[in-house]
Image 1 (cartoon, rainbow, N blue to C red):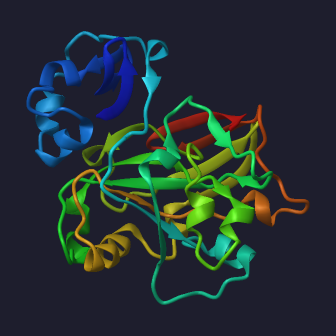
Image 2 (image 1 turned 45 degrees about the vertical axis):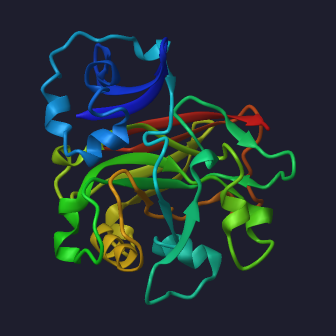
Length: 281
């Protein structure tokens, strides 16, 4: 099942994505589950699935896509989690994951423009797999981690590299308004077996820049959930952005930066394609 958040003719809502269009679950279930995060928190995915045969309310072309979870409590991002990327940055391998946080308004949805900041020309792409938490918890053991996953989505953890490097902390370069993309939808975990191989790619103006599989992750998804939930209580709708492969623009010779007018696509073979243009902020 594919679930998305979007803005329809009557305002923000969420729904099921089908080949025929979008079924507005907000209209049908909103009294009990006002948004996608609430639906997940209530454990009501089966209730949503029961509406799979309903007629589509909108064509995909008639809605404005929002970040899959527009209002997460937490967005926890993982740095340097693919060996090729760690090597290209020259960083030492660490015993534990490198983590940083994103804020919700740093994100846009599918087909929405990424905001290239006027303060920088060093705007870089980062293809990543996003894990959406289903059942929250604290100190979740790795062996139980898959039971806490609601689904998966594409993520462009786009980075303002010069601001990222102002200090040893990455927060500024990762949180400019509208610089990251999350979508187009969430594929529920029942569609992707625990530990199933996923392939991740990034294309810039049609040219493939990044390509990897989840086998190449240094810290696999269960380990990330275990580690993160040790220090913070994960909640339904939280997002874990699991790291980018090698091939980022900053490490190319010469560097490749996203610029206004560019089109960037993040593809996960089992999820779909997240597509955004780049526009000047």
